[in-house]
Image (cartoon, rainbow, N blue to C red; front, side, top):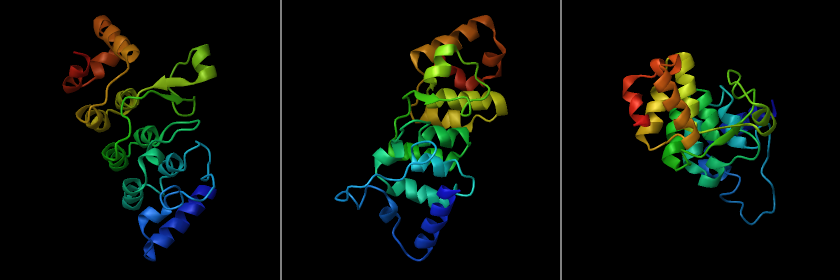
Length: 190
């Protein structure tokens, strides 16, 4: 609720003529010793992207205006990029990619981020590490929507070595997961 209230305030300020860059917690406030607000994920941007009410052209403008370190920030949960992917928000994913966020860095996810994942004891304790491309492929497998996976591949995202080995094993076995993958995405594994 709090982050939605703050988003509504930011929307009102922007509608009244405030510059998008002024809303950045770092941009114009570098001399102030103040920690930016943290909510559920540890990243204000990831939290906003998680709100359906906030996803839209205005949030894309904010993403384009903030410093890279804010767009990439991850304290304890999924990064803004992973949240954009998990919410199938293509415009936000593209804005984050254009901002220059890391595309292949594996990120920790928890059970709520990935309810369909089968987690080992270690992963339940430490979290599941997954690359943004793997998250997009998993979403494609569930929803038959491959646009974000294609976008990430076009922009240079790669799977981790471990993720590649798993997919290649599925390929050898003729696993249904591999068979559901569109032909144009098979090149990831060549």
